[in-house]
Length: 257
Ligand code: ARG
Image 1 (cartoon, helix red, strand yellow):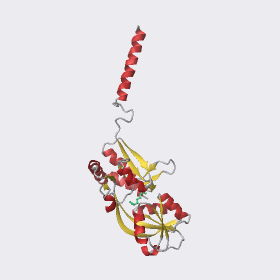
Image 2 (tube, protein in one colour):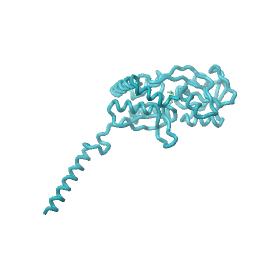
Image 3 (cartoon, helix red, strand yellow):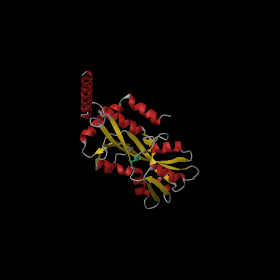
Image 4 (spheres, helix red, strand yellow):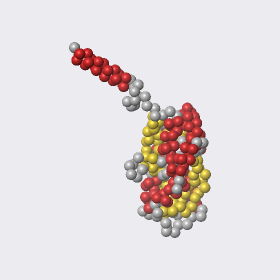
């Protein structure tokens, strides 16, 4: 008799627990979790890149969006890595909630997505192999050269506009591929965002920045056009973070010497 009572109470407790768990009241996973799905293109150090030792996607933008998400009450972020020129379509198709990818706020992009307040500034830099003898004192000096860019970026748009008729422009799906092409001589120069060019010139001894095109770009976090609620939340969180010591810590972590 004692055994049966004990058995029944165990059954009762277990089924109660199962009921509670499946209703999502305790943290067994998916049902209650608030997840922010983030699109990025992890070829852009120090903003987003793959950690060399474990392949994890990390960087300034990744830490920043995690801080923003936390402030907004999300439990976690899910990072989706893709080619840069797939990011806006992914946002429009609802495959990601936000894009953070060192993305420049431009009037053309503002027609199709909405941007947060700016959080970083950049120009375009010209990266060449050391000892290549290529001297650049104006964009004109790149005429007749083979220039590598990342497809869909402001750098690609700039060189196509200014050098499209006079140079060979090679578009790569990622900066990893563009830098590789520079290292092995397939292109003479790569035009890319100045903070990232600086990182690459530190990482690879054999390349150097020879010129900076002052484009005065601003990076913003993008959301689907009209997603005002999400954008307002992001802007509020971003302002708070940028005015707090967290911001300096983040800058120091990824740009400090
Ligand atoms: N700022 C440039 C642009 O918006 C380049 C961004 C590239 N970002 C990246 N994660 N690959 O076009």
